[in-house]
Image (cartoon, rainbow, N blue to C red; front, top):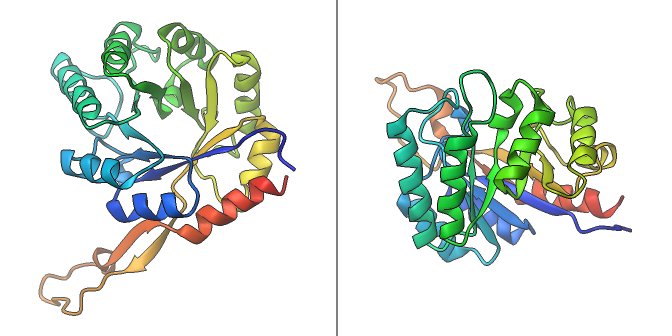
Length: 249
């Protein structure tokens, strides 16, 4: 029987995924677009639709482009504007991440983003830009000082299972000052092991499956790859299995 409440955050990039995740028992949604790129800021329309659908918490990824996390002044202004939009639409929080060129948390720029979110009554998650930092313990202390609520991390590895030992060290170092949330490669099959190894109580995953498009006509002249006719969205069965695996601990 669980000794602590487990919070399962589902990363969703469509209205379909948002609805499925909530219906299947997710605790919170992190909304984004362009998951193959690692996620970017979703459209105004998608944020508005998600907020209308959801009774659970909604956090929105604020990332103006793919690639690295070294942003120009102009890009920072875009991020600030997106945060204000999220506030106006009634979001519960945002996920941000800005680094300096030497691989540290860009405290000055992140402070502006955190203050903008707070002024709108929203919380802040620092996303997996954290895993690109030169020193994870140093970055953790910077984010505690900035007042972020949580850090999404795979322990500096490609997947949370690979970095589970490091994540455990981060949980211990955080000592309740900030939430450490494992993410990347979390599945119903490994979620219980990740919980046990890391000692975390919040987890993040997409829990997606591939579904065939409803398109009947498919032009052969354009040479469109089969992948164009596949859709990926949250799989309610996977979300439910992940939650059940947590309960069985």
